[in-house]
Image 1: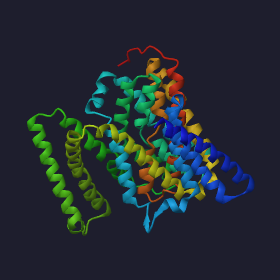
Image 2: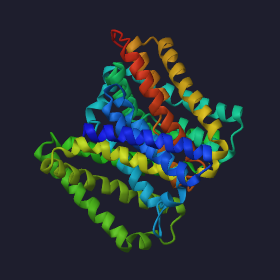
Image 3: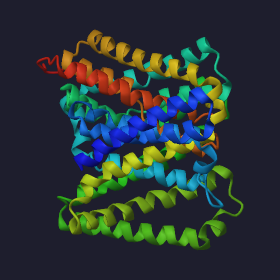
Image 4: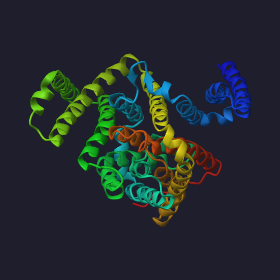
Length: 428
């Protein structure tokens, strides 16, 4: 494997040479494939250099952006099938969230009782600093309405699993990070639509109930399924019987709706009532998915360790699709959007850290809050943009921010890892 990675580094070198020659000679046929070879070669080959291996996923994101910008038409369609299909995007984002959920447990939510004040500071910082900073930056830089809405959307989302990884690398308060991520994820169905309605309601059409339902489908349903799997690991026989019964009912209800029950029951209902009916299938289906996944882990224990990689593939998919769909817009405002992403992210780190200091937290916990506030759930933002049917505009914020957050988070985490602090008890 090491030799293959080293070979990819060599190919990346040839890709760089071809890119430079192609740009100098204005040869589209040369620089386009060379750019892809360079990006993909670096993404694979960087694993051969131990000190840079932490940036491998970041380079994969850059590679997907490169492919999306270079060959948008080939990326968006597979034969006659449109890869922007909303159901495919939903499945991809749910897969990402499911993979994230497998790295969480029910115990993570109990961490609130051990460090209540730290969690309060982290959650307040997440759902106040980032939405307001995002809105302010869109006003300062005069971004187009729908692209501005995408920036605000990223700021309104909860933190994601990446923050837990970065806190681990930074040797910060990992327990606080995991608990804060769990709580902000659970609060997202209310907090995200609320802030979007307040800050972006004049930019795009924001339906509070519709967005809340979308977040439940995108985030809570897949994570709920993994929590059932976690519960079944130590459940009593009675508990297992109840969960299996719910799974059977969930499968029956989902099957009934799919086979014509939705059309029958939904006739004459309002749009919101039909949405709620659809949501019931997802919620009930989560119990079925949780039980099936639990059985799979018993047959194939290694599947848990593979789920984060499947999540990464999902992130790469919708980053590529979003970039390709919004290529024209990205070429127009990409530079400005990148500057906004850097500022938004940096202000999140800065204000999160010093807000936590003002709240009386110890330095290790302040670092955790900084990372929790600065890193958003790009997958959630992409899924919501897709649900709105505005992947090419609203979705661009998630694509650009997601790429930069991986870079900045890795740099900050490694910087703090070399300057460890002794954790002190949190104030409660």
